[in-house]
Image (tube, rainbow, N blue to C red; front, side):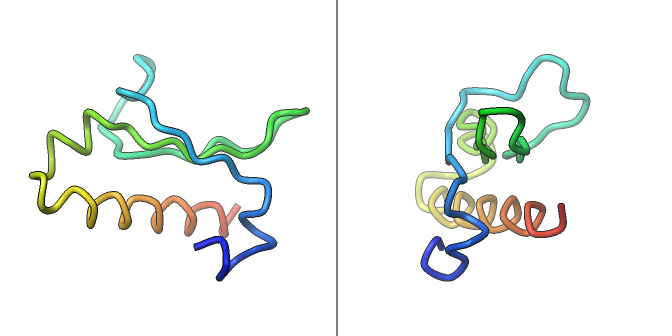
Length: 77
């Protein structure tokens, strides 16, 4: 994806966390955390949520969809 949007994604860190923060009010497969201070923008995927919603065969497709959705959110910010 970086090759298609090199300027947008040049400084984005892709990370995986087990579950969303306890403060989250709705289920989420991933989230964009905008850059702040010295911290670059992060796209975080929530592994347990993704695994719970997709079998092993569909997991990769769901991951690709979640990343694409988060990049789309990033584009709009």
